[in-house]
Length: 324
Image (tube, rainbow, N blue to C red):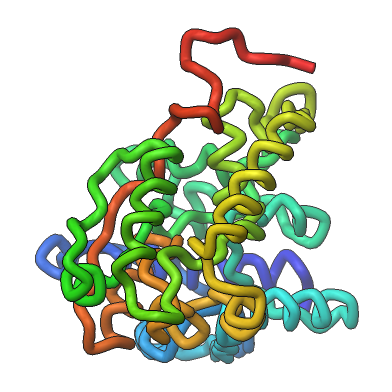
């Protein structure tokens, strides 16, 4: 299929996917979908997520195919995030990737494969006005060259999820919001003394470099990723040492799951979670995963904020930010 012709079809599907996010009560019959004047065509769409996400995505595809009967969409759910990108990388290497691919904040890593969407704005892609789409959501999907490469279908935030049932049974207060890193570690010590043998206070999230480590670096004023000078990083050796030493200390004290448990549970979702398996009490997830994690366990879960800056791990906010 011609590339531009294929992209036009993709834009029609994106329009319907975007429209599907509007609350049911807000949708009206006055919504007009762009006209398709081409012939019969087939496009492929790949994404990650659990069975529930797959079912909902396939339901939207059914709506799209009903609106555009000449277009057939082949859905390709790829399981967890790690599996998804392993599959996508293999497909890209073999020139056999889907026409539509779900990305997160890592889309710039794949920019060389992506078609700029600017020419479709206001035509097939009706997201070019504030009345149609939150324009601020276009900013993180825009490359350094000024081109739009993706369309945000939603946003969320990182949270710490905890096993409320387990912590209450241990007789420990639930973790408060906005703890500093030092306070969180101290809370872990209190929790460790009360938890059953073999259950760690925290999941070992030390290797979550894209999200947790980046958050930590940003708090220190040594951002790992920026748009400065075409993508400058302000990460320092001191930042790395602080991060690694904090986790090494927690590991030495038994505050995080041991190496075998960490190897067993890859933390790609509830099916591979040490927290869901009862091996740890607190872990890092995305806010839109909370419902899936809760559905995967009979024990009640709670949510709290990520640690705030402070303590020996982080620079005081009034200190100058290094730029070297």
